[in-house]
Image 1 (spheres, rainbow, N blue to C red):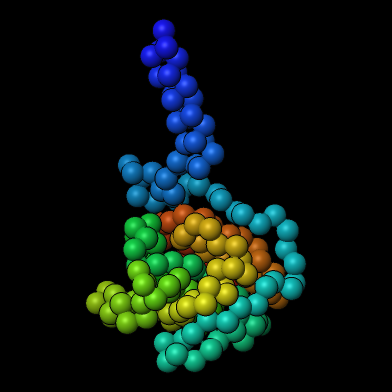
Image 2: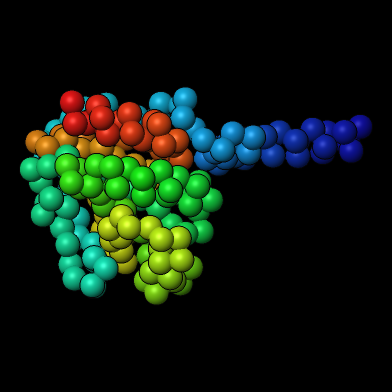
Length: 184
């Protein structure tokens, strides 16, 4: 009887821990794209979005506010993140298609250990990506937007209003649709 009670108690603790820590993966194993999942995280728009500073490819400081006046797509990502890597070709295609009318900020979460500037540069070059990379080495961007899971993509209109966010990988068609909507 005591053994059954111990097993039952252990099972309850395991289930409670799993629920509290959210054991739901960011992308289902059998579904490589989350193209049908709408995960808009923000419900209100406000003109004073938090600013942040990141480093551009030349190591110079760049602020989000430098890009106001044009629609902006911000993608938080890392090379060790499978769903992030999976959606990068779609972002490269989107940048090729919309790069003249939309600012793309591909913000890499660069911790200097698992993710280094040199490692990211090598990764980007080896994959022939042409979109602009920004390095969040101080995590000011991630903290400003409370990034707790990646990939996370934010869509900001030309007036500086956050109109949509997408948590998790998305398909090329969904990305292009969101950008078309952003351009109105």
